[in-house]
Image (cartoon, rainbow, N blue to C red; front, side, top):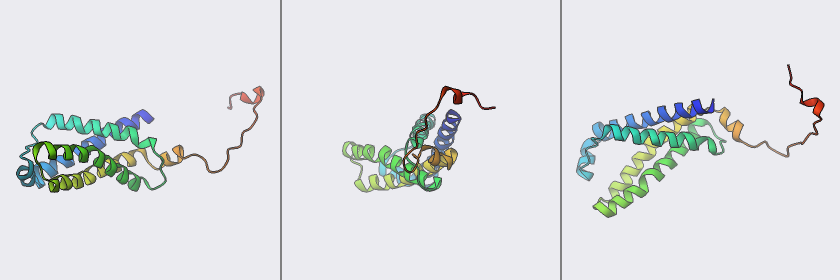
Amino acid sequence: MYLKRLTLAALIAGSAMWLLAGLWHTLIMASFYRQETEATHEGTGIILVAYLVLGAGMAYLYPRQEHRRRPVVEGLIFGMVIGLLWVFPHELAMAGAHGESIAYVLKNAAWHLVEQGLGGVVVALIYGRELGVALTPPAGPVKAERISPVTLRAHP
């Protein structure tokens, strides 16, 4: 069941972020990106692979954290952190290497908070609420019971 959810979360979240990125970069804000970076975003297939890899990483990491909030909130925060870690350091390096403005770096990083935030919500919703219960340690001390070989029989 875990592998099925991981695969589903990776594919759906990666595809959702890719579609959202395509709408944003090539339709809604195309002129902004052309003016700021001269980027044309033509490598659609490679970009899809990148987003599927990102979705897989998010789907792998998400269940390994403690969950105490609703899945939508957990996923949004998780995705925003991933977006910041994924884009911001790279954009800073590109600003230094290619002379992009810091204002552009901050605007693009803000967009990726939204984009990967949505991806995080998708991942969280696929894993669902029971994940928080399954990965949260029990409250208080755990009582150890002594087991005899007789009690190890299979239950009908």
